[in-house]
Length: 242
Ligand code: SF4
Ligand code: SF4
Image (cartoon, rainbow, N blue to C red):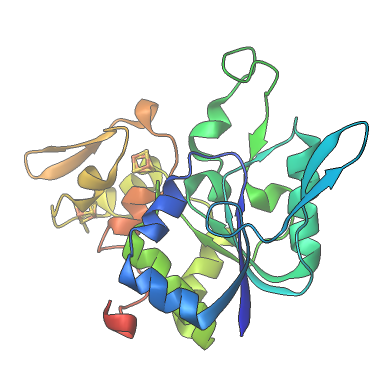
């Protein structure tokens, strides 16, 4: 059985909630994989070391993992996070950056330190700036269907379907500015409003039937690029009834 992990770095857990929102499809997937590490969905990796001096709780990332879904950016001020992602890379065949924070840093990228609730934390970077990443799924969070279809394609080894997600690793141009350059200013927009509906920070408003992007509000999450039907993305395959 394929060994899958979910690794949680600096993020809000929204990507995992989006994945869990698949309900019965999540159950189908869990029957197809061996979930070997996931702080929220499984806890068999937790080891409690009880000595006379102190009680330590450790989580050990397992060996020989096939697919790691990594959520959140890497906090460079947190040695544990940096060590964990290096450990994940060393022990995993396919590392997937799941969601805006893992792919581009998203809203965490705007941290300058000195503010609550993490006053000493300054630098949050995308996973690919610390270790090599194989695939990236932008979005804040990525849609439920996008995650399910990606996981099923990965389990089936459907390289055609996965190819655009490999492209996102190399080309992180997934901001509202990129939507503007790649679609709207090219005259390709058909005014469907999906980009506006998907933007969590309301950086895109529909004006006279076309999107108006306020770049100063954009947090570079990639949701609009993922949702735009004018951006080339893999076609649905009807797997698991999706
Ligand atoms: Fe994300 Fe909105 Fe920026 Fe698009 S415009 S990348 S949806 S924040
Ligand atoms: Fe235009 Fe729809 Fe693409 Fe937004 S999602 S840029 S409205 S085609």
